[in-house]
Length: 278
Length: 278
Image (cartoon, rainbow over all chains, first blue to last red; front, top):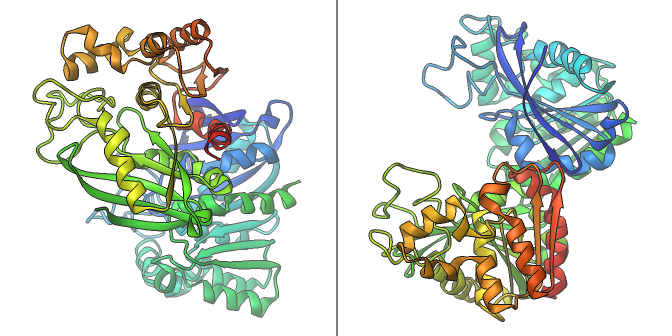
């Protein structure tokens, strides 16, 4: 059961926000949806967008300019929040931006006190698609994309769930989280100290292990402050080269980690998704 | 003298934020600028964007998606804040959203304690264009647009300063502020109780008085909660009809007062501006 919180028209389509009780996350969750004009008359395919650290479902909705292109291409946008929310959901004791609320890292936490709520992996790959495909005019054609922590999430979902997503793209993803400070902090907190358990949430390691992936497009800005220490696109690039999968890894001079970068290349990404969603 | 606070690449151009000491407003002001790629090699015309209540220079920058089209058309975007700011600048005693900080209403205040800082009219029409035309690769071809309170500001600037702006447009402007609650509150506070002094900041009254205007495009959403009570586009429409000026007033079914409305029609508005800026 989803409850519509708001709706307005955008680019001839419907920009909406919903609330529901999540059984996976044990809390009330909100998410945003854009339905293109084509959804008035027929079911449409869906692109899932996973946002980055500190974001909610509203950042991509308001800043990326994706609705314009999604309306042209007839693609729905499904935009979840980045962590469980609400009273009773534990947060980082220091209120850090990179752990706890707004920083679910798209994993299923096994450690206390996180294990009760922080199951963003199952939420994204199971509960949310079942919910929206029951409630909204969507086909079962899905693809996935995201930014930074959400780029990591999108790559992991696509690499681990063969057949679930027609293709995957990412903006400035955390490519090798087992080898960067953000990943160390999140994985040790949510998953514990056994690094074998971390591999299942690391795109570079998953690709090297499975050696297969849906079509992949990754865009990275060269002026991104997090590039070398946190994002490590070269590591993913080497794994792509070693495995020979169908993938494009683009570098863009002058672009940083912000939504201005996403807005500048979202049209290209949506056309990439449309090619596989049709 | 302007001091650059930040810069990033967007759509091949430069999205920047500046700070300066404003002599007009007696405080430090910030504003945003987008320079299209064409500005790397030649001076470009400028569209001034005036934002609405509660906004800063960053709302339009991050939410409207204007840079994509401005980059195609070779137009700079100059995006000021909506009021004086900083310690020492008085705010509404109740912290209301529609008066004081974030709500300068683009007037020159004559009443205390507002008269020292709240001179947004002079700031927009004199100080800011002089400053940016000295500092940035801009021609003297200018146009102006805005949203809600900023739509009111844009129309007033264009109607009172013949030759200053090649054209004007507005999204959901406060068309007749002497006849609506927002206008009553702002004008009585900033200008005092003599309603004759209010006429100089009322687009509908100015048009009826001067009976001339630069080419004008006004867009209004039919699902805008403020439409009837605050915005009164019919009043402006009647003045347009009476004076026979070159103007288009469009109504769009289903669109509300949000940036989703602006984003949906900013491309149309920018093409309108480009026609007169070239």
